[in-house]
Image (cartoon, rainbow, N blue to C red):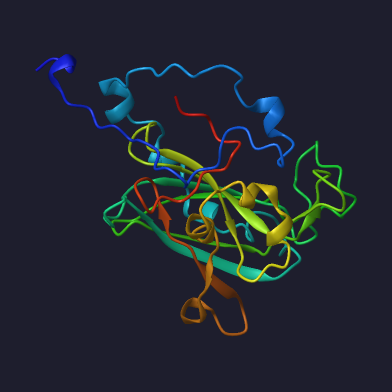
Length: 243
């Protein structure tokens, strides 16, 4: 059977879920959003079925961001866990889940971060894991701090963790952000508020999970991620545009 005879899946974006590529309140988007109409390119069999990474390079300790250096990092230890799902609730097995975040003082381990909060020598703020047969993932980390970012007057970003997920092919990819429940800075965060639908916006907020909290050690948060469909998790507006 030739590639032209195979019916390749299509992954349309549901209305009202993902943020527009141009959202002026988020001041980075006018510089990054395309100014011309996007031309769609047909997906090929290789893009749908081809492997995109080697699972062997993901180590067990990569999912514990508190054990990547000689000593414990400063801050509130947390467990973040959940499932990666298809739109019909089926688990996505073997998905690569990558995270990056600021430290407890709200500073990234990055040369371009100019926030005058201290760097933590025991916290790099990056990790990854592969989902199991039930689509589950789990990270141990430090709750990130809020930080100023100059988007508007007295602008502070709520605490959040960045997620990148890749399923079984490069076309199954999403970049998004997870927020913590009850954060008082939600109302002024243009990235969260660029998602048009309030229900879709709420899907970016994790749930405090006492059942997975480890006594005298760490609080836990649960956050499921749906890769596409009517209940899809909203993308980061800085994610790659789709044609």
